[in-house]
Image (cartoon, rainbow, N blue to C red; front, side, top):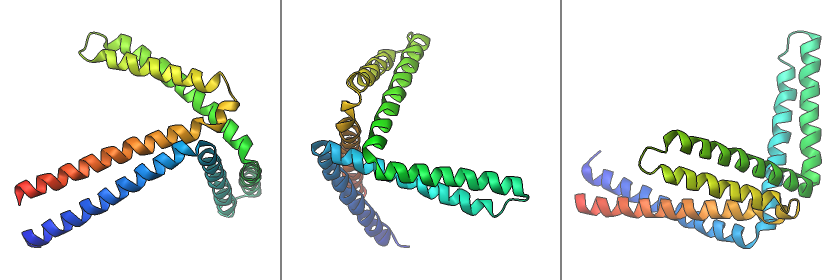
Length: 185
């Protein structure tokens, strides 16, 4: 490849990256403005993943040697497919469950970050670890306290904020890369 074609490829790649970043930002704002619909969509997606995992278990059962292993794998596959199907047809229940799990994850994460702060408190910037832990605990409380009513907003808004931040980060990085290319070229 010549230097010119490498530059063209780099411009094309950064252009696609910029486009994807803008799509993420737009989807993030949609998720923030439609948090319940986003949460239901995430619940259905998780339900479908569980169903496909169950189908994988069912297929895998035919590779088993022996009736006991075959039966065990079939039963696990059936549980996955039935459970995933139930959640897919009851997305509100799936959303409530996911929201409660999210609150539990935030609780554990917040506690672990605060413990980490005490281990690293002598280091510069360790206050940020404490801040992150406290904010994460606050998020856990804000989700858990009004649960299950928090299910209508928590997953969608948090996913939306994540998409917006990731989109802006990707956009800024891609624009910086393009600017660096102009300086080099």
